[in-house]
Image (cartoon, rainbow, N blue to C red; front, side, top):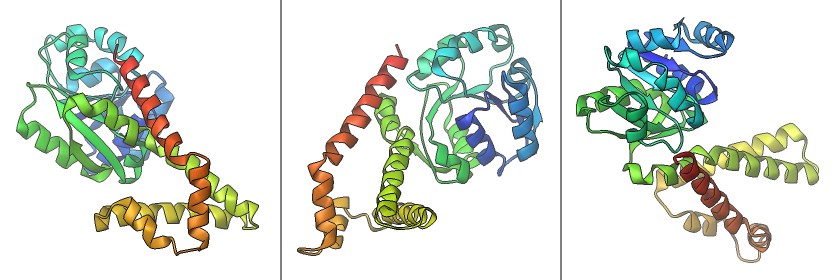
Amino acid sequence: MKYGFIGCGNMGGALARALAKTTKDILLSDYDVSKAITLAEEIGCRVGTNEEVVSRCDRVFVAVKPQMAQAVLGALLPLFQTHTPLLISMAAGLTTDKIETFAGGNLPVIRIMPNTPAGIGKGLIMYCKNKLVTDADVADFVFDMRHAGTLDALDEKYIDAGTSVSGCGPAFMYLFLEALADGGVACGLPRDKAMLYAATTMAGAAEMVLQSGKHPGELKDAVCSPGGSTIMGVKALEDHGLRSAAINAVMAAFEKNKELGK
């Protein structure tokens, strides 16, 4: 097996689905065996134990909650003494040094912070590595995960901040999207139409920022006609502190990410 997953939850499952578009040489493990079996049947790979994943796979995704990582990896220490796979950790707040220490030391570690849209090929995956990971390892990993979305190298000292934007961001976006749709319903739109219009508009606006390279403020100004309905809607958002709420949401997530690493 080339790749293994210890954990098949929402994020681990999303990455496994993306990876399966590159290779079927994947071994899945989860404390909920039925979850691993269901995912394996979906993407066409196999199921094993944590021990089998570590002993048989060259690259192992550690897709468990941060508070579980030390116990899970510690239980596998004897195996790490005879086999040193490349560990790919997505545990929020845990540095490459901590993951390496949990696994007994002297192991190559790539730390990633993905988001759930990776499951449909629209994700953002930040990554960094320890000194035992070669450039060839990174190139292979980035190529194999290309179906997950955008992969971006980031200095580890910025990972927690980046996670607070991209990792937590989908939840923030869903809240705003739902609120836009609710506003449409309040104005008389059928629910399905309101949701379609809100989601499509959000996706299109984001793509305009990416493709044009323009500042969001400039694009916003282009929509706001003098004395028009859009600028009045923008005023209502400003009156209710939309920007401040968004900034505070990211900062709160950042503080929690730092706590997880302690």
